[in-house]
Length: 281
Image (cartoon, rainbow, N blue to C red; front, top):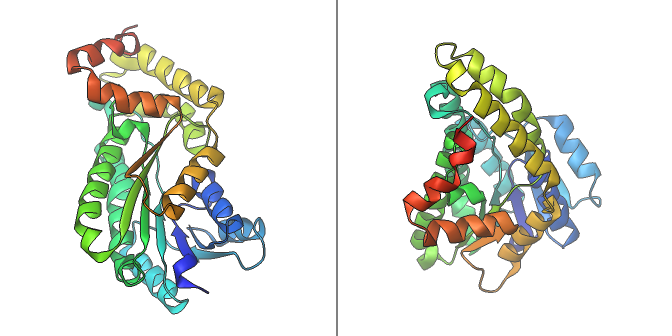
């Protein structure tokens, strides 16, 4: 196994991570597919050419698990690239946001990604490798009822900026891929979110029920209708890994590009007005 062509992809069991793992394997990389269940690892490996994808079972929120995965990767020759993709999406009005769900959101999307990066940095630094952090268009622009998810993505953007600047002297390049709305299993789960969240907050449920339920349905439908595909995201990840001088950010999809532009150009008050229809019955 050539370390300069070995990439670990977290959250590779489904959705964007699986698509990235398979595209990288087709493009000549050896992929270590980070999964939490053996059967998921077997499925993604079976979908690739023999020997190009090797499952690596670990949980990004379990410190011992992360250390063991890094040790396994090292025994296999080390990694040249890391794609931090693992993540979940918690959607709720801020007043209704269960604190334990906020912790879970941040543990998986931010703290776990930092832990994986720390564990693999000796290998990445030794091979003067690459890190690609998959965030979201919501890492530039927070929208109503997606506060927890946006908080995690903003944090991952900050993590990426800090890493990029700290690792320049060591020859490790860091890039961010920012997908917009796209149909993956992460969005399918949102349809059950509204009732669950509101049931845990009966005192204020009626305040948000109509607009939040409408938002969840509209957002999920928007992902289903999106022309952006997982392959589009995987191609951006591939470019970030293979470019001689990778860009710092790769927005994917018109909505992601629009979010970046709006966050830079419009005053907060004008941005707020864009979201009025989402917050009024």
